[in-house]
Structures are given as C-alpha cells and as structure tokens.
Image (tube, rainbow, N blue to C red; front, side):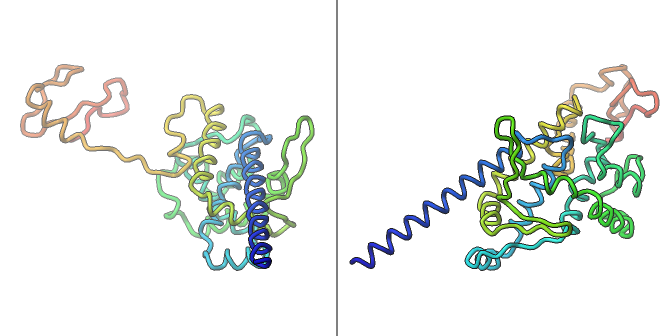
Length: 271
C-alpha cells in the first residue's frame, strides 16, 4: 500500500510538471505570434515549419526522443526547402508584399526575384526548373536564418526583451528542437497551424490593403471556380440578350458577356 501511494504521488507530480511545461510552451508560442517584434513574415514561416515538421515525424521516434530526452537535430537546409514552398505562391503568383519597407525587401524575396525573375508566374512551384529550385534553397540556407532563428524565441517582458530558448537550441548550421517542444507541436497541430496562418494574414493585411482571400493565398490553396451551368439554364429561359449592352445572344451557343469596361479583353467568355 505504501509503495502504491508513492507511485501514485510520483505520477501526480509528473502530470503536474508536464502540464506546466505545456502551459509554458503555449504561453511563449502565443507571445511569439502576437507580441514579438516583426519587421517581416519570417517568424510566421519558422513557426509554421516547426509545427509542420514535428507533425510529420514518425510517432515512435517522437516517443523515443521524449523518453530519452533527445533533441531533434535539423539542418538549416530543411527549413530552407519549406520556406521556399511557403513563399512561392505569395511572391511569384500573388505578388504579396512581405514587409513595410519596399526599398529593402526581405532576403527571401530578393533571392526568389534574382533566380526566378520578378514577372508574374502562373505555373505551380513543382513545375519549376529543379536546378533553380536547388539554387534558391542553397541561398535561403546561407542567408535567411542568421536573424530569425536567434530572435524567434525573444519574448517581450514589459520594456525588456528576454531570450527564452524553450523550443530549441541552435548553432550556425543546425536547430536542436527539444522533445517537449516536438510533443507540444504534434499534439496541438491543428490549433497552432490555424493560429499561425491567422496571425500571418493579419500582419500581411496591414501591408496589402484590400487584397482578398489572404488566408487561402498563404495556405497555397488553388481558387476553385464553381460552374455557372446551373444558373445559365435557369436564366436562359428568361433572358436572351446581354443585360449590359442588350446585344442578342446566339441561340445555338449562348455566350456570357463578362467585362465591357476592359478594352484589352474580348469581353466575352465562351460558356
């Protein structure tokens, strides 16, 4: 009975300690997203990488590391690959500004512009030249982490900024993510992911005024256009002329007039 009481007491204390660790991690992560100083969006990208990477780790490996208090060692080239994918649509397809000072673009924007050009690119990231992708990843690895990795864990306490290495240690080549951080990221993946994207969108919204669908653009979702066929069948029974210019629509093949104000377009879209 005495041994059972000791065992129960130990289990209670372990549970209390683990709960306190989770609360501490949650507090610091929320502070990084909502209160930490940000000149650009790097901190959001690094937060997303840490959460995504942890979630994709094999569960048995995570349990082993937690049990033995082993860190997860991550070479900088791995977050470089993730950063390039995160920023691809935002920079190449949607031209989303990532900071306030347009005279000093973030390095990742400069790298992507230098390697892939500044013109609009409608193609998907996966279809890009593999040599260019590899070159961009090398440049991001070499240039983009010297500030965000040391500063990511800086937490504001009143007028002071304190470095709290609660999630990882680091050197000039590797991240050493703590097992309790991996566990926290995995167990709260859905909530943390949504929080990151929301705060990322709030930050970008202040810079890109009026830009619609920011969250879907950050997430990289393709815009899905719904079919107008059903509406056309219903309205076709009542309208036989363009509502704007009153031109009769051909009965053998109905056409939808779209934009009379744009002279550079033909103003009609075949339905």
